[in-house]
Length: 200
Image (cartoon, one colour):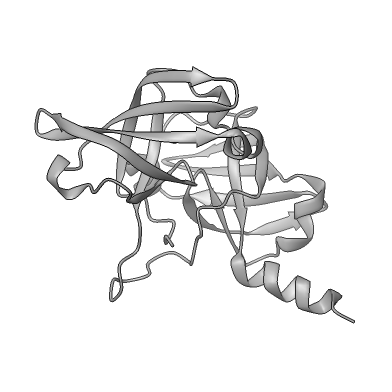
């Protein structure tokens, strides 16, 4: 479980494997000793398991494996070396939940349709996959590339969010532009409420 509060920006330094299973090596500022093999790390919103690690200067590198389901449902299949990635460690009991509860199970890929620069902030209009739009409501929460955001307005499958200066400064979204694909996770509570409403 995660909160959608990005704790580091990593860099993809190597990609190996085949079409349905890729091994990704990511350089990060996390201390190598603080990463456990088998630990879960959210990478651009996708919960992946650490399978190898090592020290790299004052930081570290770690490797994760992305299987067929992850490659099909997320943007991971399109990542190439040099890409900046939002990272978040798994939530520990007793820690502050600063964003909202995020599972790291990406629901689908959304597209940035419009980017409005507002001084040092940005307003993004995002198009969700049609089957996920019913889970998105004004003042509700979404996670985009692992970032917890509040929905401002909704129109059909499009919704808007504001990106504050701090978020632009500490995430991999400094250069986000219209046309970019992002990993979308809808609010956990909204998903379960919708399921309950469908029950006979």
